Length: 397
Image (cartoon, rainbow, N blue to C red; front, side):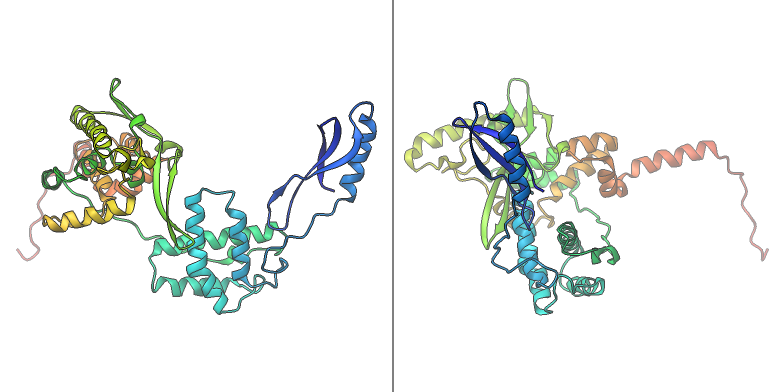
């Protein structure tokens, strides 16, 4: 029997029921009792029980037929996507959709595998094939999607158990981050100082910003009086249904990503000058100025936002143009961390500076760079452990 309660509306009692359909979507229909509120409380409660007892949850017309273990796994994945759309961030949904529609779905559709017919060995063989043409990180993301989809199938009683219980998760390769040293960064800053990306590049390397954080930086996140800059808004570029979509969000990657940092003098002056220049651009361009992204720090002369992919591509072209060593734009963040480590900044402070959710993430990525701590350890042991002065003579003497 579905749950429900009474609700008053326009002087009458209504039975408000709550249930989830076959694909997990929540519904709350209002069913009239035709009983006036005045003097009918007990009668309305009895009517509510009757309505709840007789209510039949309607079948969902999904366009893929009735949900069952006999349906194609690829069709089930599309229905699973419909359910996830309202329960995850749009960027997450877009990533799931891309993996399902371009990789996972087509593979299992070609194999004509049903939801109930997919075995652990089928999924393991899918990983083997994907490893030949995708990165390990991509295959791990596919694993996450398939695991979640089968969990949902078990929750809906379409399956008794998930084949993922017997599937070995693809191993994640240990990532060794690339980075620039202080001399390389100084050269990069000098070569790009007059380019429209110059300030963005400098702030990314200094603060270790993620791409979505620096592109999403807004003027209201900068407090010139107190001298702070706060990460609280992001802009992400993704593909959704074959179209490029810019997702603007007031939610950072994790709770730890929301952080306030000191605004140093050299950036304060340049940012104030940039804000004044944007005001001039608005006056000069008039109605031609694009106010869609008004309030963002990094826009061009006409007000158009520096889109994430454009930033990455332009950064790569700048390195090539000036004969600089090729690194990814994200490696500016790694360069920031490596410089802090090289200058004795503790790992905990680096974690907070970068906005990692836990210190384990920071340590896993940057521990191999922490040579200073190894020197301290070696010196400590050298003082504590007294090694006897002894040089063995060669046996042949």
